[in-house]
Structure formats: C-alpha cells, structure tokens
Length: 200
Image (tube, rainbow, N blue to C red; front, side, top):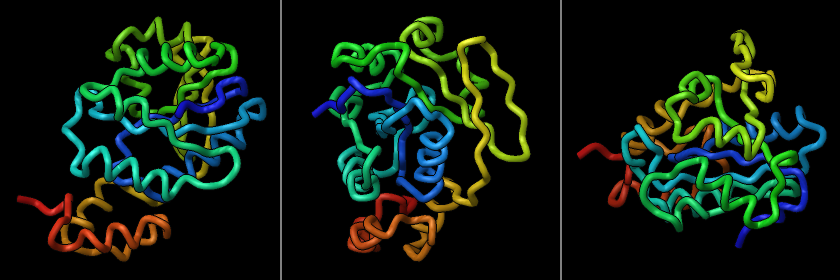
C-alpha cells in the first residue's frame, strides 16, 4: 500500500540494516525542522547502488522497520523492496508522483555524506525536478547547498552507528540501546543460529 501523498511528504530512503534509534532521531528532527511537511515515509532499499548488499534480508529489514516506525506522521513504504534489484531514487520519486505526490510538497531526506556524492546518482537533475532535497547537517559540521532548491537542516548529534551496531550484532550482542525496543525481541530470536550479521 502506498502512503497518502496528498499531504506534504518527506521520503527517507536507506538500507536500514538494521533500523536504529539514530534513524528515528533523524526522521523526527526532519519533521520538526520542516513545518510544511506532515509525514516521514521510510523507504527501505532493495540494494543501494554502489554499496554492498545488506546483511539482513529485505524481508527482515522491512519487518524491523514496521515494528520500529510507529506513531502519527510516520510510516513505511515497501516500493523499492517490491521492485527488487538496484534501488534508484529517481524511480521511487516517479512512483510517488504517480500515486498523487506533487513536486512542491515532496522531499527526499539524505545525509551530508550521501549529498556530497549526489552528482554520481542516477539522473540528479531529474531528482531535483521531482522533489526538494532535504540534507541533514549534523551538529558541529558544515554542509553547503549545491543547488538553490536544496534545503539544509541542522540536527543534534546522535551516537548511533550502523557499522558499530552490526559489529555488536555479529558478535551475538543484542543489548545495544540503539536498537528500538519493539525490534529487540525479533533480533534476539535470530541469535545465534540465524544471525544475519555473523561473519562467515
């Protein structure tokens, strides 16, 4: 099911391998920073171009997102998982517009690191025609807009790290405070026999 794109929407794409409190902090901060936006929609990638395949399956990552993303103004859209293969932002944005989104009320949320490489994405000019890029500038860093339509928002730092969390999970440790509470029981069931993060 697609989100209600009749209202102003922030799309938040990523591997979410796994979803953690840092991701939720970014989403909440973005919604607070953009008064006209009424919802944040998490869009888990099937495979992010230029990155290694996620350790957890698409079904696992989607399930954890649906467990973690709760409350008014937040939802999950599985379009890239259903599409399979490489997940390209331009294709997701086109689908959003086909479902009723308008480019003047559609945002794509991304971090400063990803933003610095935006010129290497598939059709960056087309992306900017379909939405406004919403770039997270973390406290203590400086990110400059590359284009007049791009919007930079500053948010407070959060200690969560996807890499460190995966390392802890690989070691069979599911105690991290960065794991959203609704997700923890499902992760614990996978350890140790079916741990997707355990090194081969």
